[in-house]
Image (cartoon, rainbow, N blue to C red; front, side):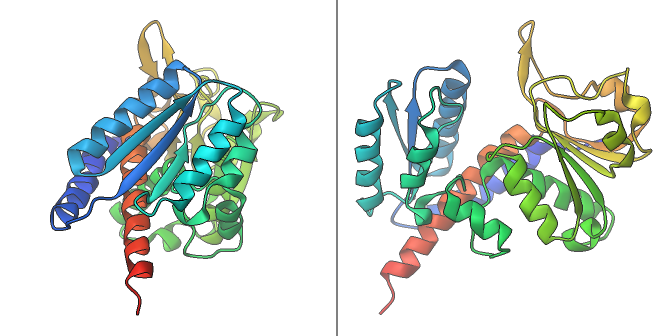
Length: 291
């Protein structure tokens, strides 16, 4: 079993962006809106701030309390109109039920997390200019890295493959499923209410799991196909230790590839957010310099 070292791949991507930005007079600017004070969000935001500073992307964080819907809405509209802001994200997880209407306010050209209906719809319409969110983009990058190790393009590698995605939210599962379908994979979306998950494990050539729970264990690993590829995008803290959805020792004899937690999809996701922000910045520059 090979471990995909997302941290190293992330460092390579970030270094490339840093070099490109060092040659520019203007910097990309990313606005992060955070509602509430949930610990995971605090951790994610601090990592993004640190990485942005290291590579030359300006990051502004706006923190609000739960229930400040009108105030947050006006801030999003203000950021939409601000030509010095190139990307806007609403940091998830967010408490309360006001997330979707707030996401819909974000200008699609600045939706670097790919969570507006506009961005999600373009994925299902197979339009190339959509923003694919940071985590699904990281997962696709990981699969592409694996495909190259077999001497195949991403499209060649995925065509006809059975891919099981255990997550069906708009942050990961749904946009990822659309992208995989566009590349002719056969996709199954599973979730917390899926019955007899073992049946779907048996058929999967590639498994993507992002639940925060132990999904693949010693108890059910016998259901895995030999040489299955497992992309673990789960995240939880157990007894102070960061862990994913997969018991590594349970899949060592079955999996051909595994993304470790920590050090796999997590750092790649941060790099992809920076890449999306850089791409939005370039698009903005092109639009504003057209004759």
